Image (cartoon, rainbow, N blue to C red; front, side, top):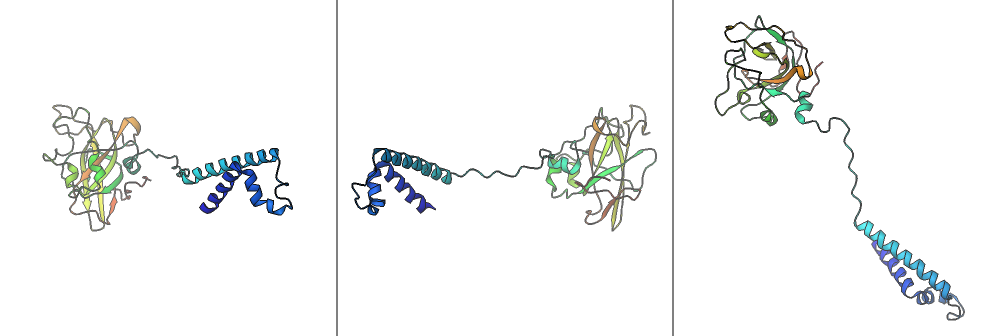
Length: 257
């Protein structure tokens, strides 16, 4: 291709500069009188013009070949292309983490509202994987005070609740309420989890949980998506994660049924 382009360029330059000489070499041999049969001034002018146009085409084509247009990348499907990995795994809006350390109960407690668990994610707190969880914001209950019933206690200085967890579960909680307790039952084949919420206890109310007006099916601005880190006796591995009613809890990234 390069050789053909160079040869064509030479012919066009030759025809532009010396059209009569080019005619003698390329066509004069076919005439009985090579000199007397030369083209006239008008024919020479036309020949020179055609050569000039051809030269321009060669130059432009060479530049285009040496600088090809960038290949257009396939357009991403116009879905949540801008939605973060966290939102793709856990839904919108992105969840926040309950940064509290607690001992799980061995059975569902009485007097609290059972909150449906949406999804779960097995984690390795010691290795801090998956790492994106450790960059999420912490859940900050409204007007949280000591003794209001908020689950567990703050982790040791320099640590987070995720650092000692083997599992996180997601729930959507009524913004008026806070998680009080988590129940966990482990077997070789399954991990059964329940999350229980109530409204923060008003000062001086003692330990009685205030469960009034804790709705379990709220969405949008009336609820908040939270992740609760849970410390198990061993890693989840291939065990099934269940609700206490026996229904399976989907892994992060799988829409709840």
